[in-house]
Length: 293
Ligand SMILES: [Zn+2]
Image (cartoon, helix red, strand yellow):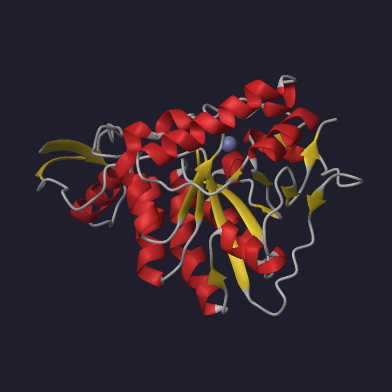
């Protein structure tokens, strides 16, 4: 690979800097051009070990007024917010919207390396084209569950049959590639309505939201992801993140070992909730409840 770069910073090691910049910019497609000083023509070896990240697709454009901004409404709903782990020290890392090449695998690499499990709430339309990632997830003891077919807001759908078909088709897609989905799902944006709760109850599915929100989709900053978890994490937390963002995968490089260092067992959300409640109850929202009715 022949790379032309003009460097204007004094005193840096050009070769190392170029390599770092190239790996940051996903394969050297960016032009690193500054006016004048020294023109260097550098022959670099192909950067084979450096993973090539998929460009950040905006898989789920989040609305300005995301429901993530709204306070949860727990009064009178069929929800379980207080998760008593009865002495066990467990947390559930959960990742929404994928799978996606490289970022999901990077998180799986870390879970495998440090000995942890997690839950991946995937969009149904992405499953068939990412079957290997799903199979690997399950092989490593993590779980894959549905997050709708393509991120429809269930709280805007009044027809229970439509919601039911969406939940079922996503689970069937996961099952078709060997993903062994549990009877749980996470609604897009965490939003439900009574129709969604009733459809879930009839299908036998529990609804899984979260207790700790990193807002990683908003700031895309690994340090903020790390701080938002490590400052407040308690046993029983269900932590919501998005594996479609490289910044989140990067944050996991520090978060996963730090949680294990503090004595937390990283479990799937099914393991966590089963430990706390026994059987999961269909139609019930676990974590914060954003039911709109
Ligand atoms: Zn989502």
